[in-house]
Structures are given as C-alpha cells and as structure tokens.
Length: 205
Image 1 (tube, rainbow, N blue to C red):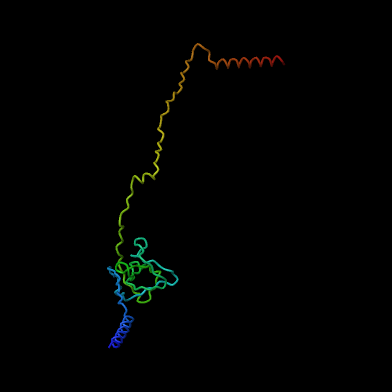
Image 2 (image 1 turned 180 degrees about the vertical axis):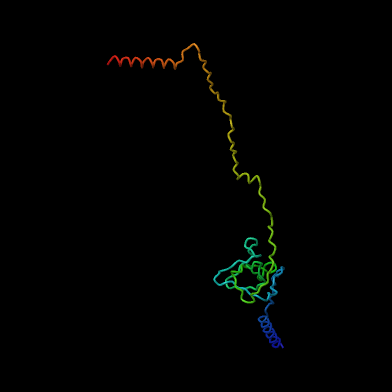
C-alpha cells in the first residue's frame, strides 16, 4: 500500500512538471492609438486629354491659375510626368490639369512646357478668381519718416531794384553877343598868316 502511494506521488510529480514545462503565459496585445483626422483619398481622375512634361525639362511649376504673377505656385511636375487635362485658358497659353492635394484638385501648367498625348481638342475654361492677400500691409508714417531725408528748401534770391540813375544834364551855353565869334578870329588869323607868307615870298624874289 505504501509502495503504491509512493508510485502515485512520483507519477503526479512528473505530470505536474510536464504541465509546467508546456505552459506559456498569454501575451497581451497593445493597440496603438489610431489617428482621428481624415485621410484624403483619390476617388478618381477625369478621362480625356493627357498632357506630359517634356523630357528636356527637369521640372515645371504648377500654378493655381493661368498666370505666373497673378496666381501663386502650388506644386511641381517632373520631366515625363503625365496628368489628365480639363481644358485650356482663353489665350490658349495655359492648360488646366488634375492635380490632387490642392483645392478642387485642379491646377494650371504653362502650355509650351507640356505635350498633349491624346484628345488634343480642349475646351476653353474661365480663369479662377485671383487670391486676395491675407492682410493689407500698412506703413507706419513715423517709422518711414526716420528713413526719409528731410528736404532742404532752396529759396530763390529776392529781387532788389537798382538805385535810379541820375542822368547828367548840360545847360545850354548862353552866347554872348558882345564877344567876337571864335570862327571869325580863326579865319582872320589864317588870312593874315597867308598874306604875310605871300609878301615874304614876293620879297624874296
């Protein structure tokens, strides 16, 4: 009886050890927090014309409208990259393409930079409204005045009238009737001299 109890104890011990060796604890799975924002998905692309960037260009800019100075750039296309086309601008210099990730998934590329691969008859589309600036910059007049050099007024010299000229006046000489005229004296002396010279000439002969 005692032998049987010992044998049963050994068997139970072996079975317990085997059960402990085969037992593995359950690993708990930790779930990461899922993002709460919405992820944009592409629902489809328009069918029709396809444009491709010329291979000799590294990349081209994509604009929000058909102009480089009225609309800002919103992306790029690489050389050889293709995009579905919606239409062209009124002057046929710009092509509107499908460009995901921008408002309405529409953008514009410069027509000479791309080649139309199929269905080249594109409709004419109106230009989108030009974007308005977020704020209108204002200039502080006090700050601007610090960088503006004050203009010195150049006053023209005042005109001063010259002093009046005193014109010299000569009083008429009053002829004296009691005096012999000067011309008569000169004529008389000349006559006397000539007469004397004639007399001397005749006496010398």
